[in-house]
Length: 349
Image 1: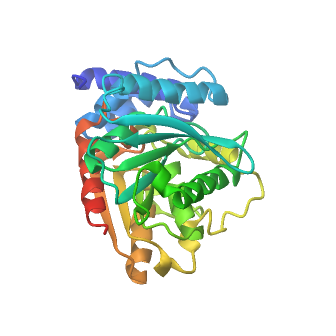
Image 2 (image 1 turned 45 degrees about the vertical axis):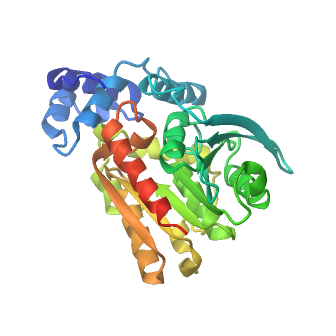
Image 3 (image 1 turned 180 degrees about the horizontal axis):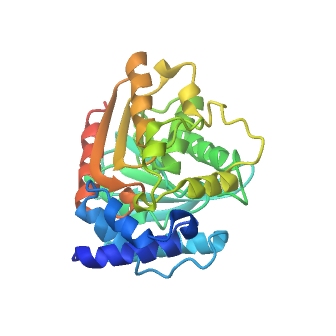
């Protein structure tokens, strides 16, 4: 775990924000350094401040418009943050491909020691539908598999902008359907419960799958975006780069994940607009307190409450978007989240 020096953090946050966040520094004003120090949110946990300090040590992005550089930044971030945890999975890790009508989709199958055969979880990584991979999220998925004693399968769906919506969603649906139809070949009983899970973009994918597919028994949604009308108050509350997000970053991601002219009111995109929420499976929401998408989870919970769907929301305080994939920097926050997943899955029968 990193040793936190608050004075160093204040200096390094400024450099990190100017180098790595897609926002015009000039638009912030001449007193950028002073403003960051003055306006630093007191709710930020020590782990989040250590995260800022860590990111400042990475190779800065020289061209934010380059998808290749953005993906490399994402890969480097996760690899270096989780370096001491990579390769610690004590179970069996198997790689294979699911053949669909349009492509071959790589998957990673995490089978822990003393596996329970009554459940299986399909995991979709975050990264704004444009970056991230099974590799970036390998550490958190193996922790989830170990904690729940359940088989978890991580999916390498195709990414925008090369493969924009609905391709990344169709890939995810195809893999899910294949696993449902062949669950015994993945090491579980024929009667096993099948769940979907994901963080950020992966949470959105999971929620969308549950809108359109049958035979999904539970969903685990980790700080996803579920309403693309973008009216949530938290979107306006957390616009500063200290929250590791910004409106320009969101605009850039959406441009690369969706084609112009796509109907964002389609329930497969804005899952809030599903007309039959009562048919949705039991749901666990894991929410980052200081996240632009925080209020989406609260609003979605209200929809499920009204529809009579069993659900639970767990708020992780002091953390920002993306914390869940970084247990090497967020050991306490990730442990809290993983424990919530374990308890939720134990309630599914």
